Length: 181
Image (cartoon, rainbow, N blue to C red; front, top):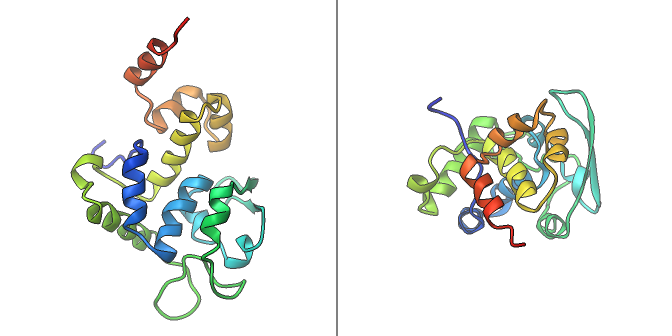
């Protein structure tokens, strides 16, 4: 498939993209990666859902399942920039009333940052789903059991999850080769 997007595996690349963003747009990248939500759920978040809180409880639009996300210390640091009233959308459109940005605008924000970071050639296709895939990859990289990641992402098999987060056969072989006994 030509338009498939992948996780941002390199932390250095991720930080370059993060540094190319500010304010609301930076939160799109950081919270999207930290929460692992689908973009449709991410864009509906309001300031009052997160400000001064330690966790977020929401019902996912696609699965109609309740999900609780506990904030890490780095998420809490990112949230200190939240401004506005509690009922303002975090990813508020700059056009008109209190409405969130569109998926298309989120896509443009992310791709603009990749371009400014000079990573378009290296990373390839990036989209709003890249954030969720990067979330899954970071969990895997941090040693979270693949079965747990599969449950968080609501996948039906470990194989599906490994493919989704972009873990290749080479990376699996490399992991085995790293074991020192």
